[in-house]
Image 1 (cartoon, one colour):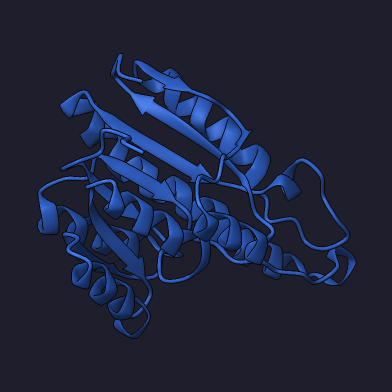
Image 2: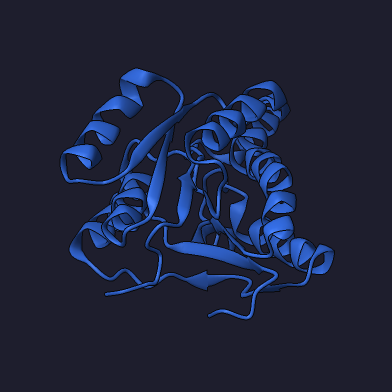
Length: 211
């Protein structure tokens, strides 16, 4: 498969395990220069080392996206690594399986900050730079639980990811696909999807007529 990504610079948040790791590996296999993101070097180093051993151009960006200061630091590391970010995959988040009736408001706020506000932080910092270059992609990983909730605490990303992509679309000359179930082209992706029970996502293309 040739996705015409050779030389593109891609940051995948939360890419030390699971779906995030599968995405960053796939992007690297397509020739993209990838930035592995995690909270600590202990989490991210093994993925970066494995990618480099396979011949990929891989850098690290470390930080907790639950705060503005740390998000700034992640963006700074990413820009320093490759001079820019062409593709942002907002994958970072966590699953909280506790029943909603047992979940305190402070816990709801923590989940929302982790899964949704982190996506907004990163998009706000990188979308304007993509617009200046007149090319960019922002992919917001979500969950079908957002459309078909179960008895636990919803990850919130499903419907919010759609709305936020449309907001970006209105801010720049961009295209957005809204919500979709992502195709999973290889066994690694399928395993990651099944492991996390997560398959939704939304993307936005900034200022480009390219497919």
